[in-house]
Structure formats: C-alpha cells, structure tokens
Amino acid sequence: MTLGQHQEAFSRDFAKLLNHLHDNGYEVRCGELERTKAQQEIYFKEGKTKTMNSNHLKRCAVDLHIFQNGNWLTAKADLQEVGDFWESLSPENRWGGNFKSFIDTPHFERNV
Ligand SMILES: [Zn+2]
Image (cartoon, rainbow, N blue to C red; front, side, top):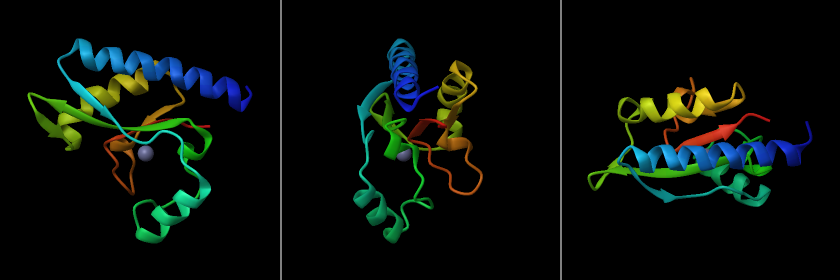
C-alpha cells in the first residue's frame, strides 16, 4: 500500500469517526492533522511529543477535542468507547488513549 492509499484509508475512517461521534451526542472541535517536521521538532523540544516519527508527519493522524454536554472530555475512561470504535475500523488504527508510555486521548491515527 502506498502512503497516498494509507492517507485515503485514514480519511475514510476519519469520516466514519466524525459520524459516529455526531450520531452519539458528541461535539467535535478539530485540531491538528498535518504537521511539518519543524513543528514536530518544536513539540519534541517542549516535551509535547516523545517521537520524531509521528503519523501526523504522514497526514495519517488527527487530534480531536471531543465535547459532551458542553464538557471537554480528556479522560481515557470518558473516551474509551470512542477509541474502541476507531480501532474497530482497521487493524492499523490506534487511539492515543491506549498508548502505553504517553497517553494522548485526543489523538487518532493510522499506523503507517
Ligand atoms: Zn496527535
């Protein structure tokens, strides 16, 4: 599979995720999807990321701020159902809430 095909599969699953959220009473404020290498280096130096190999660099990750009843959900327990849905769409999908070393609940990616 080419990177372009991974990007296309990611955007299809991203659309399904947004529909799932809206159909289940959540509101979404979209954050970062594509990230430049220079921006990744800034985040790395600031400790906001632990990797220089982010799937954001490949346009295969997105950060979403998810709200329910006006409350911004950030806890893993509050978003587990959403993360499980994301990971059910493809064996290559990973939710940052399930990361072991650096829990990142707004982060949804296709591991490329
Ligand atoms: Zn992210």
